[in-house]
Each structure stands twice: as C-alpha cells, then as structure tokens.
Image 1 (tube, rainbow, N blue to C red):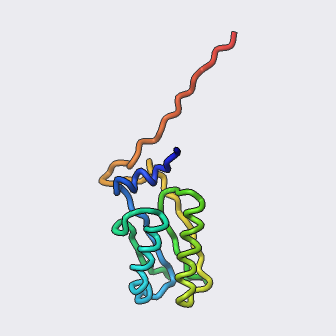
Image 2: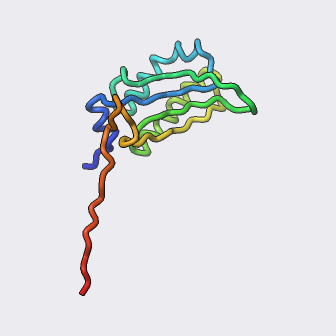
Image 3: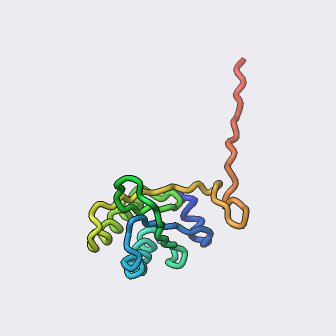
Length: 132
C-alpha cells in the first residue's frame, strides 16, 4: 500500500499544517479555532496540537476576497476536497460566503526543521541498456 510522505511525517509528528486566514475577523477566528482544528485534524488524521492557525494582516490594494491558504504536504485528492468543503461550510455559517480556499503544497525535501530537510531528495538510478 502506497503511503504519502506526509502521512509518515504525521505519524512521527515531524511537521505541521498552517491555516493562514486573510480578511477575517480576529475574534471570530479565535472563537471557531477549536472547531476548525478538530475538523481539520479529523479529516487529515493528524494530532490536533500540530495544526497552526494564523491571521495575516494585509493591505488591500485592489478588491480582494477573504482567503484561506492551507500549507501542508500532499494528501489524497479526496482529503483536500473534504477539507475545502468542510472549512468553507464552517466559514459560510459565519457570513463568509465568498472565501477563496487554496492549498500550498509543501515539498518534504524543501521543508527544513532545525536546519535539516525532513527528507533527502530522492535520486533516481538510471539503468543503462547497451544495444549491440
């Protein structure tokens, strides 16, 4: 059975997903954070204590919708779909109907913890075939 590297990292508690909100009310996020974390960790099957929530302060230059940026390692498409649907539904309940949700997929070999990558970049061995 194929295991995503992200699942292996989660088993070892080596990494954390980040949920970065832009254009949301701080008090609302503080109120719903426990539920957001509960739902997120349940869908992705990770410990709740590694899910990080941030509210980013941005200066809008043009009209931009509120957004939720999720930084995490690749999962099965069904998990990404379930996360987006669940989180959107929760935000919609609080009046945020035009939320853009997108994933920033992290690469394990480019994610550093204490100065070390979580995984070395795999090398592909090329077998040369000689034709006579």
